[in-house]
Amino acid sequence: MNETDIDAQNVRQGISITPASKAGFFNKKFVRAGAVALLLVTVCACISALVAQQFQRRTVVFDMKGTIDLFMQQSAKKQLDENSARVLTTRFDQALKASLNDWQQAHGDLILVPPAVVMPVLDITPQIQADIAHRMQEAP
Image 1 (tube, rainbow, N blue to C red):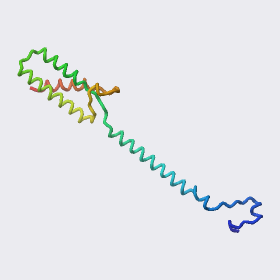
Image 2 (image 1 turned 135 degrees about the vertical axis):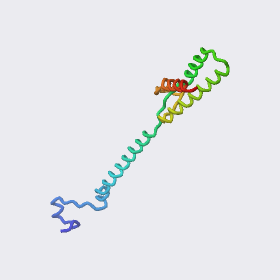
Image 3 (image 1 turned 45 degrees about the horizontal axis):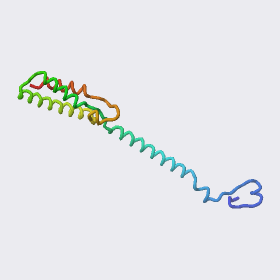
């Protein structure tokens, strides 16, 4: 007997025939394709999030004004002549730039001054000041 043969006896036995056009829309292939597409989108989103997190730069702060003010106070106590003060200021400027540049290259961080940052972030001022002091002691 064929599925398309409909007679009174088959109807009484409860056989129902569904047209192929309605049954084929939500078949197994459609469900599998949807699941694979959803899985692919999820995997791509996770990979994108990991890559974005890996390459995101961290923000740190350095109190440039406070460091320069501290240097000015310490150099004022030494009562240096004009040429010695100029040499000392040049050494300090070079040590400051080198220290900040080395930190940025070593850590890949974005260094800002405290007024430019709204949320609390890592303050690297003590580490940079210690590095500047070390560089100033090494320089002639």
